[in-house]
Amino acid sequence: MPDYRRAWHPGGTYFFTVNLLQRQGNDLLVRHVDLLREAVRSVRQRHPFIIHGWVVLPDHLHCIIELPANDADFATRWRLIKMEFSKALPKTERRSQIRVARGERGIWQRRYWEHLIRNEADFCAHMDYVHINPLRHGLVRCVGDWPYSTFHRLVEQGVYPTNWAGGGEDVLEYED
Image 1: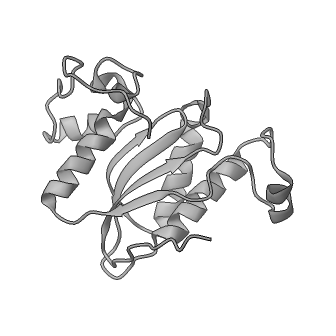
Image 2: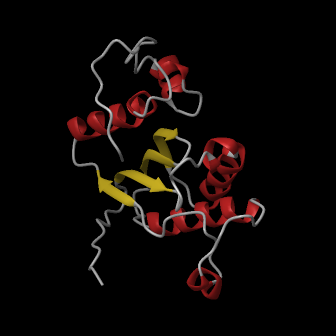
């Protein structure tokens, strides 16, 4: 088994990609975005963190969060967010015998991608990546058209202009 190494940094700011188990043609996250929002809100009450950027796509999400100064436990937060979201859904997914034996739902990939943000340039690059994702996946022609994103809040705060990544850019398609 690979030795997955996590960057545990108290008070760190992290970029995450979290995927559904079945990604192809799955729109579960946007179909149930209110349940996901509630799971995040609930976990934040018990295990605080700051959301800098977040985008929910049909089959995965990206976010940048900052942990409290004395806390590096992002793993508990993701375990709880995934668990609360999953428990709120009816059990309609196909589950392997292994998942059934472990009492797991067949909704999320077991792991996620995390990256410790190193500096301001890294932060800005990952914020742009989070917010341009719906455009790159061909879900919208303008970033501002995607409703499941912190982009709108950041426009109100003056961080991004309203027409940022308005669709005129040469954006390459890619797979996350």
